[in-house]
Image 1 (cartoon, rainbow, N blue to C red):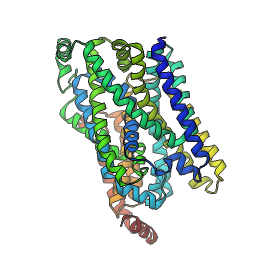
Image 2 (cartoon, helix red, strand yellow):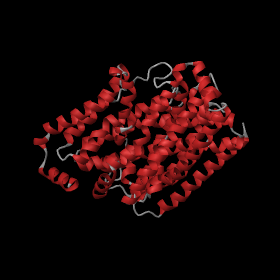
Image 3 (cartoon, rainbow, N blue to C red):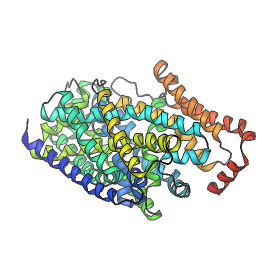
Length: 487
C-alpha cells in the first residue's frame, strides 16, 4: 500500500462523513422529513445545482468506465463522449422552470409524485416505481464496481475487500444525511473532478512525451485508434448519431437528473446552472476521455482497461498528488451512487409505502423506514457487484437506456401536452421497457443503431396512441386537474 496516495483519500472520506453528520443535524430539526431527506428542501442555488447535476451525471462511467473504453477504442470514443456536453443545458431547458413550477404546485418530491398527480393512476405509479428499481439497481452496481476498482488499484486489496470499503463509506453518509448531504458533497466533488481532470490529463501528456509523440505511438499500434470509427471500426456514423438519444436527448427521462430540475431555489439559480453545468460537463468529458486514449501510449497492454485512470495517476504523478487526483473519480462515483440510492429508496418509501400501504404513517416511522430501506438497497447492490462485467460502462448505459425508454414521454409530453393521459403513459412505459430489454438481449445493434433508439420511438407511438384511445375514458375531474397544472 502507498500511504502517500491513501492518506489524501482517507481525508476526503472523513470530510464526506462530517458533511453527512452536519446534514443529519439539519434533518433532526426538520418539520418535513420526507421533503428534506429526499429533496433537500428545494434550496439549491446556481453553483450547487450545476455541480450536483454534473456530479450525479458524471459517474463511474465518466471517470473509470469511459476512459477505460476510450483506452480500448481510441479517439472515436472521445468524439462520442462529447455528445454529452449539452446534457445539463438540454435538461434544464426542457424541464427547467415549467417542471419546477408544476412540482411545487403538486407538492411533488419525486419524479413519481409528478407522474401520480399528472396521470391520477395507481398503475402508472407502481409501473414507474418498478422500472426505477429495476434499472437503477444496474446503474448502482456499475458505481459500486467503479469504486471498488479504484480502491483495488490504489491499495492492492482484493476486489471484494475494496467493494466492501466503498459500499460502507457511501452508505454511512447517505443514510444519515439524505439529499442535503448529497447536494453539499456534490458541490465539493464537482470542483475536485475539474481539478483532477486537469492534473491527470497534463500528467499523461507529459509522461507520453507530448501529444505528437503519443499520436505517433497510437498510429504505430493501430491507425484506427486515431480515426472517428474506433479501433475495430464499430463506431459507424449511424451508431454514433444514435448516441444522441442515449446520452443527449433521452437524459430528460432519467429520474436522477430530472429530480434536480425540481430542487433549485429560483429562476436565477437555474439560469446560472445552465451555463456552469454545460462548461463543466464539456471540460470533464473531453479531459477524462482524452486521458484514457493517451494512456494507451503510456501504459500499453492493460488486461483490465477500466483500471487505466487510477493506474495512470499512480504512474505519472507523485504519490501525494495521485491521492488528491484520485479523489476526483471517487467523488464522481460517490456523488452518483448516493443520488441513485435516494431515488430507489424514495420510490419504495414515498411512492409505494406512503401512497398505497400506510398513507397515515407517523413521522418517526417514516424516518426509520427511509433509513432502513436505503441501507437494505445498498447491501443488495453490494452483492450484485461482486461479479463484475468486463466493462462497467455496459451496466451504466443499459440502465440509462431502460429509464429513458420508460420515462421520457410520460415526463416531457406530460408537461407539454394536455391530451396525454394514464392509458398513454402506461402504454409508453410498458412498451418502452419491454422492447428495450428484448432488443438489448436479442438484437442489440438493430439497424446499426444503439438499442435505445427503437424503444424510444415505439414508446412515443404508444403514448400518443394510448392517449387517443383512452381520451373518452378520461374523467371530468381528471381533465380539470390537468388544466389547472398545464395552464
